[in-house]
Length: 69
Image (cartoon, rainbow, N blue to C red; front, side):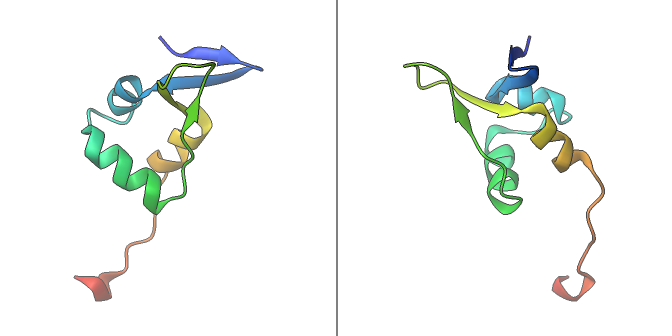
């Protein structure tokens, strides 16, 4: 269950992977890096969270560069 801080939803890595259709942690990490999605932590723990609004950016259609295939 996501946590809510300042009216924004934050997902753990596991929740984010599920939210994005069951992708792997490595795929999430790579996509977050490519699309500039920030990781967040809360308090003194090292648990990583992703904002739902940022995850939604990954779910949007993106142009495909056919010249790279």
